[in-house]
Amino acid sequence: MTSNYPKIWQNVKLVKTKITGEMEEYASKIVGIEENDIFLLETPIKQTQLVLLINGSVVNMIYMHENLGMYSVDLEVVEKIRDDNNIPLVRAKKVSDIRKIQRRNFFRLLTSMDIAVRKINGVVLENTKTVDISGGGIRLLSKQDFDINDIVRLDFQLESKEFSVDAKVVKIDYTDVRGAKEVSLQFIDILEKDRNEIIRFIFDKQREGIKKGMFSNE
Image (tube, rainbow, N blue to C red; front, side):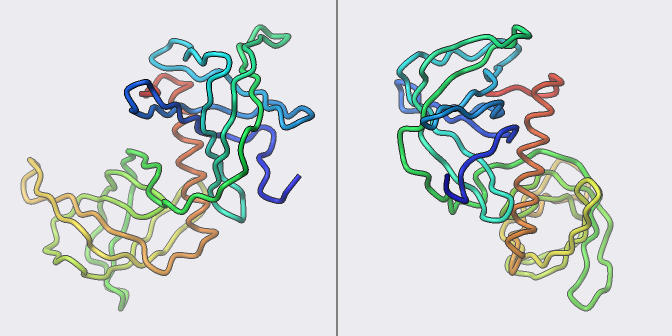
């Protein structure tokens, strides 16, 4: 196995291409790895229903490596089975080389969390809430007057880890909230390990949300 090979118990995304060419993505998890590059995956769920993955069809599996970033590999569905606890699983085999994904904004998580916006000199502009987060940046609510390309420092926390990241304003949208704007910021000079931790956080939260019924694979 190569160093970028997927690991058991790892959260993944399965991307399925429909006949129309439209892509659908689903949260899943690797629960077993067998000989000859065979993976056992949790059957994804969409709106409380099991997603039908046809035997012989090909799905793209996307996953995070702890230190190396995001990767994808094509899998062919071999069969659907149930384990000893009657949990539905998909057995699928690797049918392509492993490829590194460069798109940092591939996944975005809607989340409202506390965030501090500071000037680079350390002066706090405001404490506010995020709208969403991705591996490439953050969208937040703000009552400040920003210009495109302004640079600020963002302080926020994911789980128990604190982040302090410089970011550039790339888009400003006005909202229905009086005096507030949605400001989109792109991370700049972020450490790769920090970016990977953000993406892993998104993977985990999306999968947790689907299991709890907070949102669905759509």
